[in-house]
Image 1 (cartoon, rainbow, N blue to C red):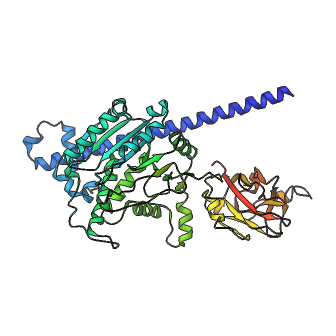
Image 2 (cartoon, one colour):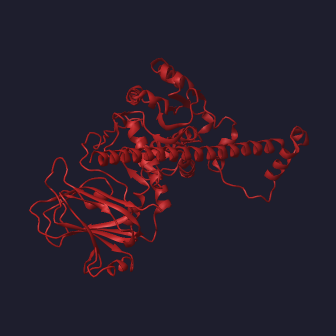
Image 3 (tube, one colour):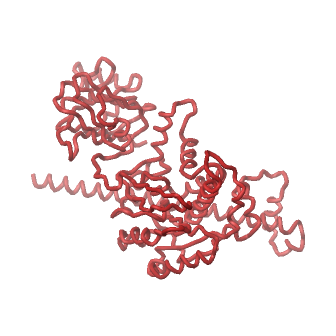
Length: 519
């Protein structure tokens, strides 16, 4: 007996070790991919420099005399009038061609650390009432372990072209955070005046005043400069603000959550529900995001533009808004509870008071979230106080339903047939431990004739088939249903929880996990 227990324990330890190795390998592959994209970006930069040389030489033989034959051939190809021109940043911001320093930081302080897991970007601008920057940095740094401080870069972007102000902020930061700056944990940059276009003649849109349109347009450009600078430094980029506080263990929580989703095709991980705070991106995706923002930087605020990117990527114009939201939720994934809280009262927009707080920041977590496949969910149960099944399936909340009766159901209908490996449904939480599903079956609906061979195996099949075509594959025990799905039933189009007997209590479904089978 002891030998069996010991062997089982050894197996679990080996399995955990293999999982850690797998995640480490996946991260190394992601780093390699990122570096390949980085080299590609650098080559594009070299080509842009060649184009500038060609434009400056105006065909002069003397100017080109120092180039090798290969370089001259490349320049000739670049000036070929029949060659197609690929759009770039200069198409959206042609004023950048007026100065060679337009994309070079006017001020850059730090050791230039690269190869980290997380880059935290903090834009800051002059505030007439109060600056929260120092408090924000202390909150972030104090909650990092010594190891995490080596795996992170905090980039402070001072979004001002008044060099006197920039140097004043920099001087204060160097006094208060000299150790962090010298070690490479903190870097400080500011943009050149040539980076910004003329902002005084912008078209007023969406009822915003001229000053607000100017403020939000410049803010879009500030985000872009910061992202372009940070893109080559790490695997993930996290957008923050200069007036926040962070929770303990925020770094490891974000990194581990991203690694858990490494096999998913996500674009944004949200660690705060407010605005553009706590938004994580994969560094290679920053090129697409920056290009999109630059195309429409005069038109809309940053959070609207980000939502438009997601719409373009996954939404079908022929489907309804609810379907679109389901699709977006698979690439914009919300983590709860929030890891960052907004504390600033005075906005960087003059005269604006913003009493924004993240209600999820201090909330105890009464549910557990998982990233589930796109699906439409429904139930015959009456929902209590807005704790809907949609939110539970997305991991945003728990589902709370009033007293189930025989024949009631909870249905998950997938957008397309899927191979599902395992399922988990957990009911009851710490505040309401008695609100359990008992006398309830778990049923799956195979796609077309999948599973029909199972009915022919024996006269009494392992799985009972219901009148509506579902196969009954499991039941709830002590409020939990968990198990593997026979692969002969896959692919399936739906999974259903069927109430078999009247209940005397309500039901609180706090965890739903439907794990897709590996390809």
